[in-house]
Length: 206
Image 1 (cartoon, rainbow, N blue to C red):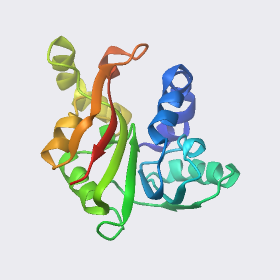
Image 2 (image 1 turned 180 degrees about the horizontal axis):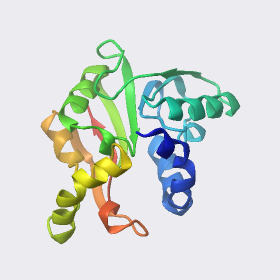
Image 3 (image 1 turned 90 degrees about the vertical axis):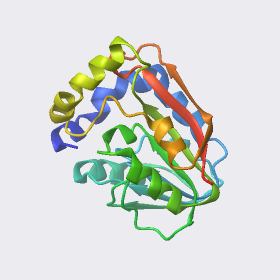
């Protein structure tokens, strides 16, 4: 992610946070416990929603500009559990096999070059039966919007610096062995057409 975009991220996403995303984050993180790894924690919007039942929270973030803002938010946020910030990408996590009770991903998987390696890494790091909790914008249902996404994706990725328009996240998780019965996809009101299909819920590791 380009540093200029990273520095403006909170400003650019403020309307979306107010409209629906802040509430969706809170709902997603209810009941988490034990050791939790968050992929691409960004500027730390999820921090306020983690419950006290979490024992250890590891926030991974490969962008230096994002980590600077994340560190500030971590230092300012009251919490009852240990928090660590790690410079790591979603496809190369510095954790032993089966060490995480849950992985959290909110608007992150669109930014990875390929979903397969990330899904495999999440499966490796999660304990059997561990949860991958996600909110992600994904490819539109088949039709004109999907065709436009596919055509625009290379240009958009170059402009924004990482984001892909056409990732099919639920399909990739299923192909990687996750139980995706708890993951739904639906159009989110108020989102631009190229980003309005949202996958959210809980995928369970085998």
